[in-house]
Image (tube, rainbow, N blue to C red; front, side):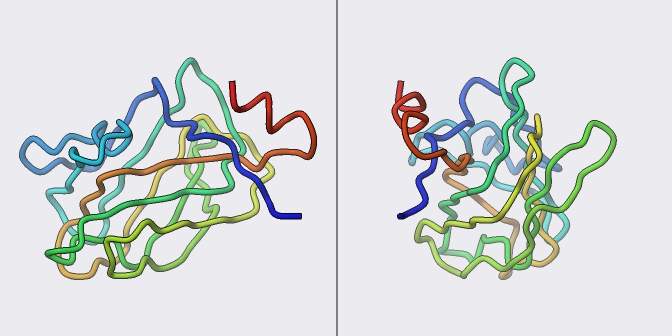
Length: 150
């Protein structure tokens, strides 16, 4: 049976980032609008984070990204981290393809976090820029799928 995931949990929360380039603000990476974007003013060790609305905590197991490709504005080596309340802990470590195609990153996570961030350690040539970032949880069998659709 295929693994099913929830809808995007990045709704109504707060985005933060290590920097913003011009008017490409951090919250624009989570607005479900493919015409807007967040762009970092720095390279390599930049980050973007999302704190879920109302103090909600989720066991995020899937992150999808749509990045800007034209000027190599994509994180290369990066991590997905969860906020413990005192520090970030690594959930996933990998490399993004140098492509504007939607990319999906899945991982095992048994801890609910109120905030998740993507942090870049290297890039493909310029500060990372994202049209969209989404975060989902793994659905349980049965009714959980329908409950998450409402």
